[in-house]
Length: 405
Ligand SMILES: Cc1ncc(COP(=O)(O)O)c(C=O)c1O
Image (cartoon, rainbow, N blue to C red; front, side, top):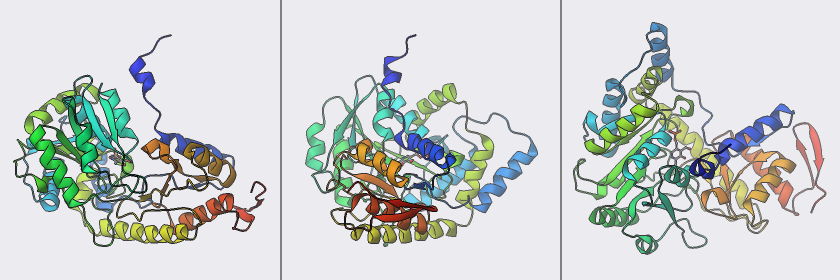
């Protein structure tokens, strides 16, 4: 049997793999705490559910336009005007099955084989794999040790005649930091002069804390939508906690949207219409649900920072958005894969190894669950690693005794 070399080189999504491991442990009756998961626990907004059920109950669920239902595109245009202060045309918008597919469509439509895409570490695990799937080469730029802010000079240094795009994700998964305005402005100015696409993955732009907000990359260009190199990606997954609805979108020059539409038409035809109307319901419904979610997550961020601050040796940069943090665990184990496995096997806590995000020695912890999950999860990690913590703990109804420190 032979397979595609390219396909075989694509890594399994570590978060999906960990979900599966957690599910299997839970099935065995273990009291697993999932600090790996990248989705809020809220229920989908009521207008989303009502719109989807109304559509489903018509029984008329057929193919719809590849680039998205006109009514959803209208809602996205309104969202874009309200949140980005940009008026775009329906021809600038393409709806896909999640922001992940939007990003795939973009890379598939702009890259030629061996074109390079600059990815800033720490990065979302899927970026390098998607670039590779589109025959491109991921070029990773790392920040200086102890910070999550890459330096503009380091980006400039890796640009070659093959550089096609850079991807910006602020607030950032996995670190939770927001890039400074000066940094984004420098990148946009530089890339537009060089003809390099700037893909702004804004999927977490509403989940921000302490009054901070990332300034949209579009603010730093005075080019119109047809001429700018800035492409915006967004979706309902994180803002509304609608991960399972699989609705994301891209906003780009018409010509690029046209190409992406052709690509999508040959892969998935269209996005399920009842899921599209659900997204429309969320976008047009009461936005207080977003604020409620934001406040819950900000509170969880405060709780996890507080818990981590009592952990000798663990350093953590305070997240400004998202529902992740990326503490440095090198004082305990510099091998994040081994550490994450150890914590799952001994303490039944799911964490994601920093190595997967280009940041070895760190673990990504999600605080999108409940306060109880966060406090109990960190208590278990402390028990497993910190010799100063009590050596007995209850996990579920089992008393566990630490005998390895
Ligand atoms: C940075 C980033 N971009 C995009 C996505 C994908 O979003 P969606 O669920 O809409 O495909 C995720 C999901 O975790 C993410 O973290």
